[in-house]
Image (cartoon, rainbow, N blue to C red; front, side, top):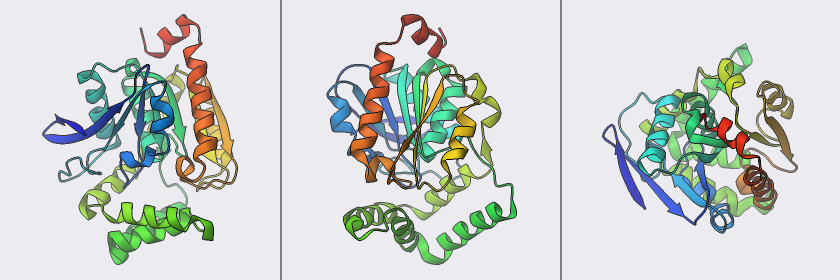
Length: 274
């Protein structure tokens, strides 16, 4: 792995393959290992950049608070220093939020955007949504990181044939620094760029598992507000679609990226703001 320092925080990353740049952004509490089923397939055709976000994996874990905008700024700085933009940005869960933030804050760095089981906002509005947030924070405090990791893993991989995936996710999430994980969780709460997504001009693919935490209709609703967005549903998938349905997900991703390679040049220029 290689690293850069952004505002004193060490950011670890890997670059593999050759071709147009694809940047992969992992989910909350995980690391670049989220993409172990995607990197080999992508690196045959693309330059694949994976990163451990601040507070995650092997990157630095400074004291909070953290913000989604800070994660996006770290990623933008990485692309600029490595002269790898504009990139096809792929974000899973919290990584999708960071992708949205990057697309509205630094559109010149985003060639296209793929958002996986995510949204452009996380603002609890009903009492049920507020209760769910409180329950999550309480569970983290009571169970600790390892106990909470087992709970999340069981929710995402409940079937008997998913035991290996369940154990892998529990082990991976259980390695988190508790303070950094809590700061990252709080970065999501109340975050929104929903009012700005209509300004995104690059092609956007919204991928959703049919059994994700939030319904397909919610993704269709926000995608309708983005000029060049469409939604793809992966059957038999929960929240961790790149992991529980890697073949279906890879096929969707590669087809979308191939479309961008054959898009008219003037479309590419609009996408990255030139």
